[in-house]
Image (cartoon, rainbow, N blue to C red; front, side, top):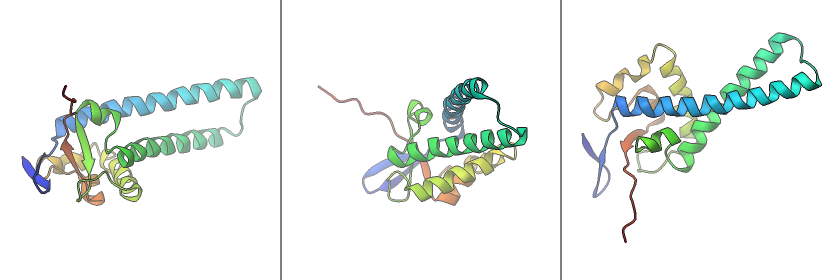
Length: 155
């Protein structure tokens, strides 16, 4: 599927397979980073003393995990338009002007990405039928994901 987001530039919308692989790579990177930080904090607290009550520990860990994932996706989307997983799959998220989304749009996208994942990834079903291959999170943030091959500079 070819579309023109910017006059004179052809854009191919990304399908569900490449997006899914990119998301899996990003999930592994982000969750691996959170796991590493949690292990370091666990080591420090074991030396200093445990935090009580346990529900507070669980609440702080969950909040830290959510904040880290939101920061990971939002910062990559707003700065370069692609996360490391998207870069490996040669994908980029853009807004209607063909630019990386601004912070508010990226935050809306990441919140709706979580909501799209919760019901067994049902929020990705529209990617199979939408003309621009957008999921629920893309529709809510008014973004699209396109193929963006890396340009190798010539001699």
